[in-house]
Length: 405
Ligand code: EZ4
Ligand code: CO
Image 1 (cartoon, rainbow, N blue to C red):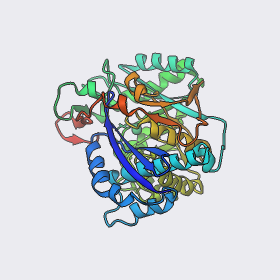
Image 2: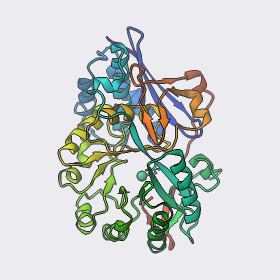
Image 3: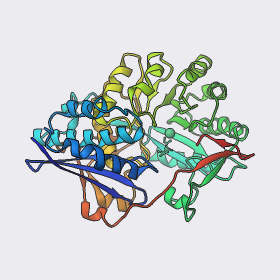
Image 4: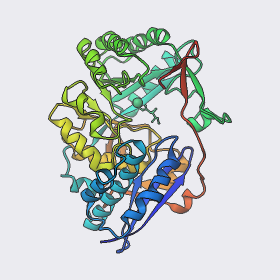
């Protein structure tokens, strides 16, 4: 079943999404997500100029061979741009195979390992009380696990806390260049243990709690934070420190029993091989869009399984519902799945473009049984929201030194 056409769409219902549509000679088509936040058009160019011409005419059924052709077949391997392009093609091919078979993709991946997908939601507050009020609402809605973040007193803007802004586009406002945020490890250390102390006092064990450090700490500082938070029994601490040097995590691991998670920016198994093999983390957070699609993530999850590492896919709003659906098919069929990050199904504009029937109930998602990935993309609606350049913020210490964002 030959590939006859591949189109790339960019739409921006509050934030940019890159969507790939692979069409076959039989008329069956598949969809994939290729969104790299802040680098969207780089992926579009890579796809249109370098990938699409090589794929037209190939058999859409040969998913593994096409994955290897795009990965091993090129001299310049890996990296977020290349892997997002591969990811989108890969998702679209799984979507096609499912539609042709008349089966949801999870059936092609081995079937169900569980009934539904447990989620962790976000409570982001202006202060501790605000974060805890939001936590209470989420507990009432039935969420079993919640990521707690709070603005840091004395710092102008904090990761994860958008104030009255509804998304990064609004946060950026009319600033043409990346917004700048401040960071102070000392101020952060005053806040975080207090946040979890109060959370446990108020909610006891009514929910599991998590926290995202977003890589702001050095390894020894992460080790210290992990130790300080042990008594609050976090489900995991996310991105405790940058792991460009994977050995960093040996130091953190030797000091704390707080479970560790990372990997949302990782693109291949090579970025996390040492962390997994040395059992330095508990959860690997690779996303289908950024780590080579369903095929890429499946390779990483199977490798992680033998080292007791579970999956906890990234679920930020900059991953499109197509990626989220791909995660659902992976999560339901992966034995060593742990938990899925969830920030809702997108804004109202986005819901007019991406349509699906995934069901949210009591903090869990019930996977769609529609053939393929189960997401429809309204091309007409998409044209109403043209691409808009946007940047993620950058971080500086209070003296102006550039820091990890
Ligand atoms: O900052 O996806 O766990 N989620 C995160 C996200 C990331 C964004 C960056 O594009 O860390 O909010
Ligand atoms: Co994160």
